[in-house]
Image (cartoon, rainbow, N blue to C red; front, side, top):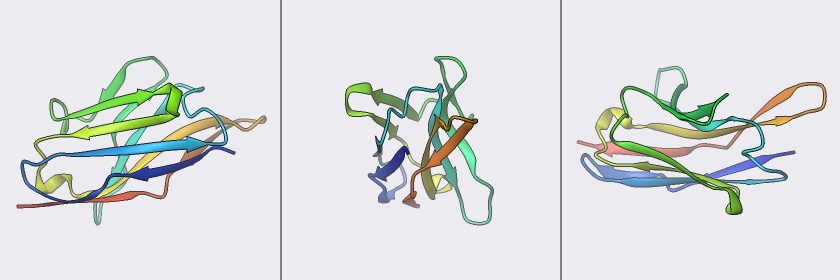
Length: 120
């Protein structure tokens, strides 16, 4: 079973940067083209931030385009989210997700989440 562990969250001032990491174990997190970063702000639904879904391109939320960059290191079974020019509205719990083949269907795997707080 694939397991994901995020790290890198924290408190940062507006305009600052953070880099999140998500490391997988128990199998490759990139085997199926459905992996990436999502976030859940207080009182809001979880939303896509940056992800690869189906094809090879990274899809970014309009709200983070030009500020956030997704990257991956296959050798480390790790994906990253570089977040620059952070805004208070980026405050959320950030989750990474991967999908594995469960034999009878695909199963989504989520990390435990890492908190990002951006102060104004």
